[in-house]
Length: 282
Image (cartoon, rainbow, N blue to C red; front, top):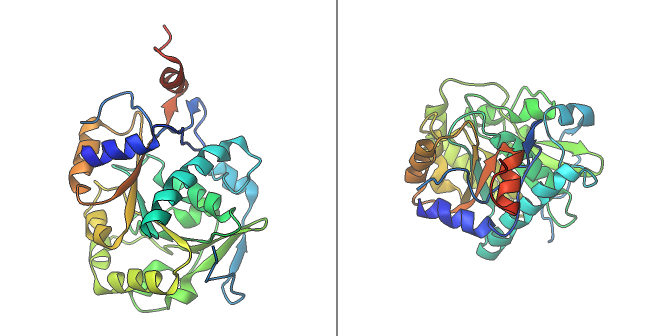
């Protein structure tokens, strides 16, 4: 598990987290309760449809990093720094976010990270949903579209016509949603159209940081198929959901990928105290 261990080591000095559920501390990229062996080239375009998002709805979905006054946004800001520093240093621009299985919080992490980055005045973000079987990005931010990734892949619309601007206050994130779930995801993900789509994103959206919400890694071969076209990966696991064997299996698939961070979600309160303060309380 060397690459996941290395990702853990890079994060060990900082506590990275998110909007945890009630009864849970923010997610942590550090020790696990188990041992798993500057200029913006794409400014806001008036032709891109803009959606003003409902703040209360976002909070109901645990999307809070658009608000820098909310204490729950701070861990995502720390994650933002930990992710952007190595990406800037190595010239990387496309980050994929995945998890071993559903229910680990990968989509919540992806969206909150995107809004945290968008709050920086010299940054722009493109958030892409590639979880074609169970897309969650559009629903999580409260928008519905008739065109999106599937329409682009099937040649029914262009990439530029499928992207929207999601706005909260003065902060905007470009979003390429999935309009409808599809059972034929493997054929689409491995198609020439998918390669062309990712190449077009890399070519035409050079300044934005591109965050791709991938499917869970162990649910299909979709992530494995698209990995070679990504620059780096963030793996999100969850206490009570992810097992050591699942993380080990993900590690086997990610052995040739750049795992930029490993995020552990849904850490119990005592777990966070244990990491910082010493032994678990009796």
